[in-house]
Length: 530
Image 1: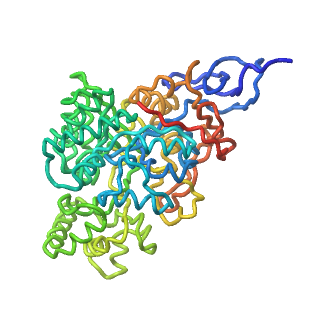
Image 2: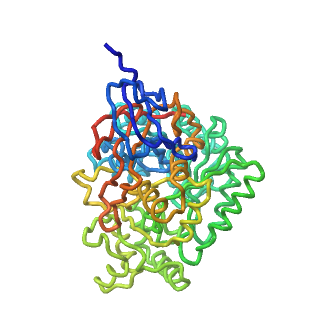
C-alpha cells in the first residue's frame, strides 16, 4: 500500500508566487498547514487532489485595511471576503478598535453594532476580545491594530483638548497593553472625533510605543480633500518623529477641486523615502467612499460624539445656523454636489439608495435642511456614499508599485437575516475581484503577477509576515485558486449584497474554507498576533 505523500494536492495550475514574477505551470503539495512541495508532482499520491487546470494558484489575498472586528463575532464565515480569495484581514483601522471598546457611553455606537446582531460587549481588554474571537472561530485570519480614537475614549472620553501628562501616560499604558496582547501597530482616524482632537505631539508619543514593539502607524488622514497635502505632511511627521513605518490608508483625493493632488502627495512620499523612511500605501478601486453623513456634510467643529450627541448639538439654533452657512459655502465653492451623495444606511428605509437632492426634493426642503433634520433625529447611524473621486486619480494611485489593496470594508454574509436592511459599499464584496477583472483583464493597468503581488507579498512585507504572502516551500498553506477569465465583481451600489465569482478554492492553513464557489463551513482562521 502506497502512503500518500500529501494531504492535499493542487494540480495542473499556473502558479503565481506572489512576488510579481511570471506565472509558471506547477503543482502544489500541502501537508498539514504547510506547503511542502511546488513542481511536477504528477506521480505523487495525495489524500485529496484538486484539479486547478486553467486556473491560477496564488497566495491567499491579504486585505490590509478592514473593519471586520465589528462583524467577526457574528459573521464568522466572512463570506464576502472569502469569495474573493481573501485569507487574512487587518482590522482595527481608522483609529477604531472594537476590542478596545468598553461599556462607557462613549462607545455607544460600537455597542449598537454588537447588540444589533444579538451580541454583547463582554470583554475589558484587547486581549480578552481576541480570545473571544478565537473561541467563536472564523473562516479567515485576522490581525489587529490598536485604534488611537478608541484609546483616547478609554482615557479621555470625548474631551476636545490635548491630553494632560497623566492622560497621555495612561494612553501609552493602554497601548502598551494592546501591543503586548498582539496588536501589530497603531491606527488613527484623524477625520473622526475624538481622533481629530489630537495633535502631532500626542500621536508621536503613542507611535513611539508601537515602534518599541516593531509596529507601524496606519492613518486615515485628517483631511483627504482640501488639506490633503498638509495631512500627508502631518502623517510623515508623526512616523518620522517616532521612528516607525508609515501606512497611508485608502489614499485618495476627495472632491473635484482636489483632483490631481495625489501627484503632489506621491512626490512627498518619494521625498520621505529618500530620507530613509519606510512608507507604503493602500487603496480601494472605487470613485466613491462611504462614511458617516455627518463627516461628509458637516464641518469638523460641528461633529461630536455619537448620533445622539450630534442630534442634541444641532438643536442649538446658533450652531445649526453656522453649520448651514458652512454647508452653503461648501456647495458654492464647488466642494460638494448634493447629487453625488447617496444615503446608504439610515433608520428610514425609504431614504436609502437615493441622493440628498432627491430626498430633499421629495420633502420640499433645501438639501442642507434635509441633512440637518435627519441628523437632528439622532435615532441611529446615518452613512452615505459620496461619489467624489476621479477615476484618473484612482488609476494613478493604483499604478504606483508601493500601493497595496485594502477594501476599507466589513466582512459580511449576504444571507444574513438583516443583510438587506443595510446598503454597504460594494467594496465589501468586490474589491479584489474588481482589481483582477477591471484593472488587470479589461484595462491592462496592472499585469496579473503584479496585481497579485499587491494583494499578497506587499502587505505581508508591511506586516512582517514571512510565512504568508508568497508561495514557497515552508509557507503556511493560505492559498487562493481562481480563474482570471471568470473572476467577476457582482456587487454594485444599487445591489451590493452579491458575492464575487471566479474563485474556486480557498485554503486557510491547509484547510478548504471555500470550494466550488461555496463556503465549506471550516473555521480555520487564526488570530495573528505580532
